Amino acid sequence: MIRHIVANALTLMIVLLIGLGGVIAWGKQEFSTAGPLQEAICLRIEPGATLRAVTRSLEDQGALAHPSIFRMGAQYTERANQLRFGSYLLPAAASMDEILDVVTRGGASTCGSEVLYRVGIARADTIVRELDPATQRFLEVVSFDAGEEPPADYSTYTEQADLRYRITLAEGVTSWQVVDALNQAEFLAGEVAEIPAEGTLAPDSYEVQRGADRAELIAEMQARQSRILAEMWEGRAEGLPLSSPEEALILASIVEKETGLADERRQVASVFVNRLNQGMRLQTDPTVIYGITGGQGVLGRGIRQSELNAETPYNTYRIDGLPPTPIANPGRASIAAALDPDETPFIFFVADGTGGHAFAETLAEHNRNVARWREIEAQQPQAQ
Image 1 (tube, one colour):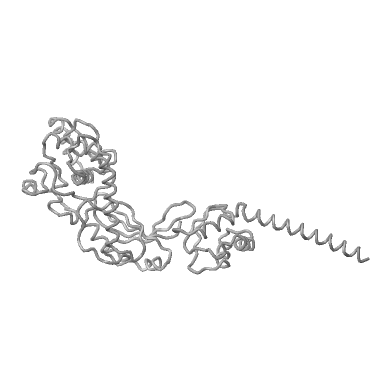
Image 2 (cartoon, one colour):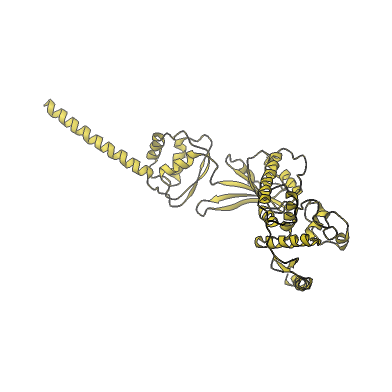
């Protein structure tokens, strides 16, 4: 009798063990197999959030079919206490194992909200945008010009602990414009003691933290531009009429202000290089304008004849060679164009009405191009 009971107990235990093994195997498979998410979502984890709270949020958003397996998997893989606060993009069909990897790996948030502070030629503005997980595109939710009172809903975003801040400098902004804009950015701190030398700031995108020091940010902009210039100078073309990296920066800034078309930069650079090689004056309006404004904002009107005739260090209609300093902060592409221009016979160019320019080798051809441009100019007010 006892032998029979023991045999039955052993049989039951074996069955239970087999059943438990099957449950564990099933749980492991569910933990690593594709999840129920139909489309990508953005999961936000608050500072100090518990595993249970995160599990509940995932369940509410339809990311988990078996919340208990998710928690047990987190415990078993020793990731239950490694949650990192932030906003994270979870792809469609993400497995529980993949979700845990995303929310415990750390690093910058991959979705959520960000403040984009754009420093442009004419103005600076603030844009708050959110990533739409489904389309992977940022959607603008708040915007206002620098110096304006922020809208009331702006504060609802700035209270988010994981809000990202990004500053972008447009190619061709002046150093004065950069400092003026940074001084108006409410999320930055500290002071900039003096305006950096023109041309020494790299137009680029800079990710910062709230409360970042303005002077340290300026130093980073200068360091990037210095690295770019050194790299480009090292690989410069032979025979350029440029004696130093500083002269290359001056020429690059002129190219930057003369054309906004990427595929024209090397052609425009070739015109100025040809003029320098032939001892011709550069005769470029942007240098004259810089001499008038000192880089402090835009001129907002046409150049007067008296200004074209004035003897100033930046009037390239009057001086030989390059002006004494850059006239803006050129981007990498314009520096590259100045140091490796196209080989062309052109020494003239004028706007062609399409946003680009018509290039010419002879004065006669250039005069015809100018005449066509004057006709286009005369028709523009009628078209408006």
